[in-house]
Image (cartoon, rainbow, N blue to C red; front, top):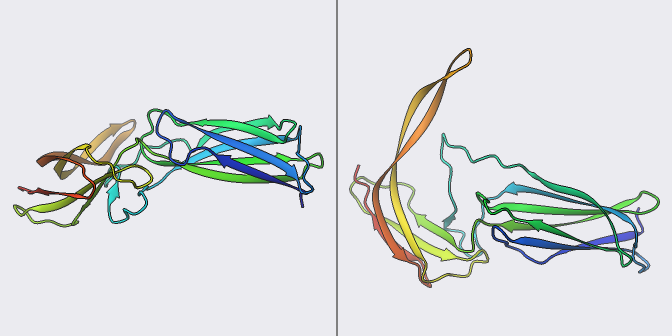
Length: 220
C-alpha cells in the first residue's frame, strides 16, 4: 500500500451561481515529509440532487418535474486536470459554479496523488451548489377538493436552513391538463404526451421567522 496520505479541504459548502469553490490539497509521506514535485490529478464531477435545507424535511424545495416533463440533462463531467504538487506537497484548484445553474447539484472533487513507484492515494470532498441564496419551501396536502380551500405553508431559508424574513413570495395554484399529440418525424409519426398549465388561483406574501400559511381555492 502507499506510504503517504492525501488530504483535501474546501472553502465553501453551499456556493451560489457565479461563485467558485477553492479546493486545497495536500499530500505527505506517513513519516511527515511533504510529497513535493509529485504528480496528481484533480477530477470534478456533478449530479442533480433533491436538496432540502437542514431542519425543513417536511417542506418541498425547488422545482418539481411531473410526468410527462423531464428534468433537463446536464453533463456530469466538469473538469479533469493534471497538476504537480509544490515543494510543500500542496496544490490548489478553483471550481466555478455556472450562472445558469438550473437546479441544485452535488459537485464531487477527487484529488489523486502518485509517488515515484506509481502507487496512488486519493481524497474526496463534495459541496452542493444551489440556484440562489434564498430557497422557497412549500408544504400542503397532496389531494384537494374543487371549490374548497387548500392551505399552503411557505418558508424561505438559506441553504443552511436559516430562516430568511422579508422576502416577497408569489404563489400560483395551477391546473394541469394532459393531452396526446402526434409528432411527424422522418420516416413516420411518433405519439407524444404533453401537459398544459393554467393558473386558477394566486397570492402574494412576505416571508417571516416562521412558516406563513396561504389559502388557495381550486375552482375547477
